[in-house]
Amino acid sequence: MTTRAPAALLRVISLGGAAYEVSGGERVHRVTWIEDDPGRSSCDCADFEYRGHQCKHLKATAAFRAADPQAALLDPLSADETLKLINPPAPRTTLRAIDPEERAIAVRALEGWRRELAAGKRTIYDFDLLWRVAGEAQRGLELEDLQPNAAAERFALAAHWCRQRASGRWDAA
Image (cartoon, rainbow, N blue to C red):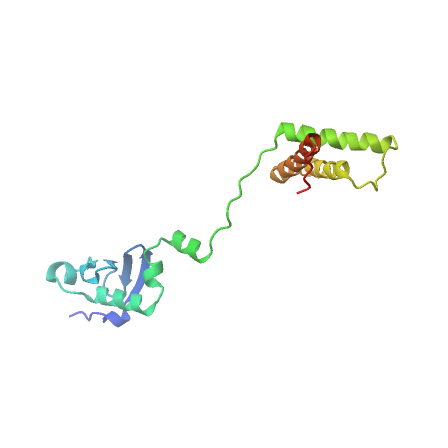
């Protein structure tokens, strides 16, 4: 006669969702747990399937779930869903492509600033709108290959300031 393991000695592992694996007896069994109605839960063992009563595997699963207060929350989730709940991924940012028109406006402003500087019409200490636009354009050029999204933002800001200035509605924001 074989000795059967009591429910307290069984090992229960959540497989995600309503599925559990119960081991420690003669064989590994699969339990399907119905959260809303545990009486409808099922096991693939002979005790449950042929004799129609709550088996030790269902009892072990019930004890496992009762011992872990988060089981009702986490067990219905897959492993990936549980990890996302515990440590949510950073929100995705929309990548912005470099707009050729915005880049051209920014670069033209930078070239204009350089021409005025070379002609002596300004100094490196003239901190005006053209200086700000030229700085954004220069930074955009520096970022263009390694961080195109950041470069696109710089070119867009420089182009925005140029358009605002051209329309007479200067807004530094």
